[in-house]
Image 1 (tube, rainbow, N blue to C red):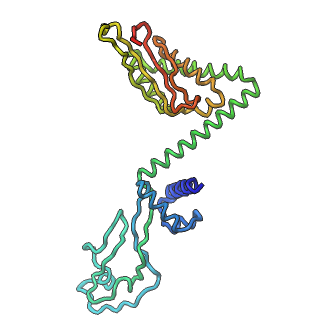
Image 2: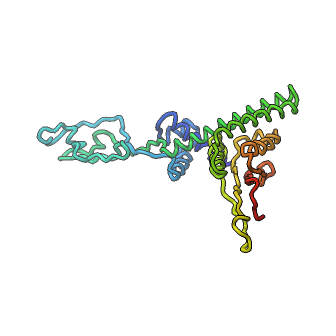
Image 3: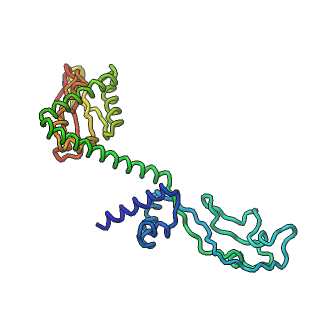
Length: 292
C-alpha cells in the first residue's frame, strides 16, 4: 500500500508541475496535503530519475535595513555598492540567481540590507518528465477507450445476442484485413511482414518480427531447405481488455493475418489470453520445402 501511495504522490507532483509550470517543495506539500519531508523525498527520487529539475532562488525577507553608506564608489548608487555591479557577482543556475556576493566597500552585508533568507529550490518538469507524463496520460486514455469498447460490446450482446456480435466483429476484421492488404504492397514476404509490424505498432501493439532459419542437413542441398519463415510477436496487445471479454476476437485476428498474407500459412505459437507474456504467430511461405 505504501508503494502505491508513493507512486500516486509522485504522479500528483508531476501533474501539478505540468499545470503550474513550477513549484517549491513547501507549495507542493500544502497543495497535496503531504508533509514537507515526504515531498522532499519524492522530489529527490524524481530528480534521480531525471524527471524534474530545480533552480535555486534566494528568498528575501520583507524588512528593510537603514543604509548608511560610508564611501560609495564614484558613480555608484548605494544599492550597487551593496549587491555589486553586473560584472559577475551573481551566480545563475538555469536562469535563477541563487547566490549574490556583495561588493562591500565598507558597507554592511547584503543580508543585513535586503533581508536575504535561505535559498529555495523551485522545481519544474524536465523533458523526460513531460514525456513520461504524456505516456501515462495516453495509457489512461487508452484504458478508458478499452473500457468503453467492452461496455459497448456487452450492451450489443444483451440487445442482439452474442452470435450477432461475433458477426459484427468478423466484419470488422475483414475490413481491417483489406486495409492491411492494400498498404502492405507486393514486395517479398519479409518486406510485407515488416510493413505489417509497422502498421501494428502504429495502432498500439508492441510488435516485432524475426526470421526463422530452417535446420539444414549437410546431406541436403540448399534448394531443398530454402524456406521463408518469420515469427511475428506482439508483447503488448492494444485490445487485451476486449479480448478477455470476447476471446473470439483473437481467432479473428489469426484469420486476418492469414487473409493479409494469402501466399502464407499463419499459425499461433503464443497467446496472452492463455497466460503467456506475448502473442506469437509463425508465418511461413507456401509451396516451399522447409526442413522441419
